[in-house]
Image 1 (tube, rainbow, N blue to C red):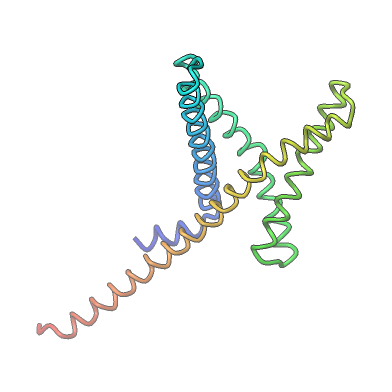
Image 2 (cartoon, rainbow, N blue to C red; image 1 turned 30 degrees about the horizontal axis):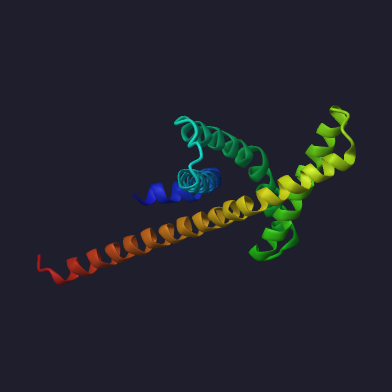
Amino acid sequence: MTDRLEEWRARPATRFLVKHVVATGVTVGGVLVLLATLYFMLLVVAILTDGGIGSPATLPIGLLLTAVLMTGVALVVFLPVTIAASWIRHRSGLTYLYEIPIAAMLLVAYILLVAIVVGLAKAYPLSSAFWYASAVSLALLLALGVYWLCLQSTGWLLTGAERMVTFVRRARDDGSDDDERVRPH
């Protein structure tokens, strides 16, 4: 069993993957819960005001499209932004708290760059690209915060689990030596 723990520690890529999968799952799940809550609130309002309740396929289709969209955002936007923020923080020797504003600035710059490129490709005015980028950045900042917090929390939980396993193994190994000394042969 000790070999498995050492093997786990020797593979930072596995740790990296686990952290980002958990962060993506929690972020996508959180957005889906918000969407479902909003849907049911609007359904109650529609019923109370004698409005139409819409199609029964609205919620499932909305949840599916949102899950696909947010997974794409997590992979294409949050993943590179958090990797770059972590790299900048490590290279600068800063604490974890600086990673949040670095990631937020990188997110805004990334979205602005994409909006400018799309605006130029579609011949839109740059002012429109700037406003779209601002709106998208504001919408994604909360989700980025959740993603980053889940990323850090998962790392802390994995480190805590590794320490607990090491502690239990040492206690078990130390206890077995004491038992052999006390027992008569």
